Image 1: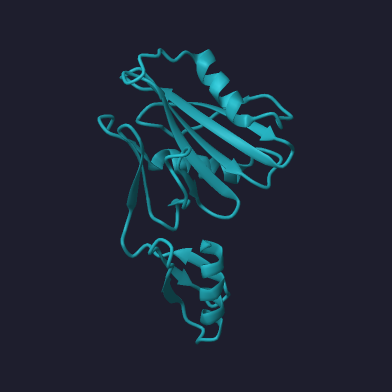
Image 2 (image 1 turned 90 degrees about the vertical axis):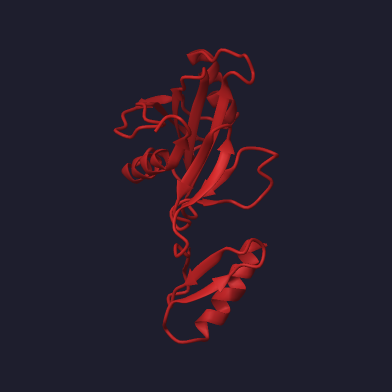
Length: 196
């Protein structure tokens, strides 16, 4: 639905002058900037927006950098998109609410479950200078089905839970420098209350 509304806005914008114009999407009230070249971006005039994604965790970013994907966040994790090629999400596993101790093996099983059955390659450890919740994360990458690359970073939080962030580049068949930059940017957008 959002795509259809956006196409309508782009058609109207193309008939107007060669200046950027602002439009509002009917389905969520989000404002977008329509460019003369028929592309668009979310309007950042309102500043950084924080979206809760779990107990004590939120993603804070300018809408044009990481925008929540519309949908039922209660059905699964809240996804964010940076462009047509990059999307990201966050999970919080275990902790005091569940009384489940998270081990490295349990975290890897969760990640393997998320990667699904279409996995051609295993998890490859990656170096990152980025921090997640003020901690140096363990980062793993994986090529999925030869068409997408998923990168996961995770840290153990003081309350016993584990925070996992994932970025997906689709289409992609390798972990690129640009994906590493996007992944680090997403990690920096994640805020955990009490870890500042």
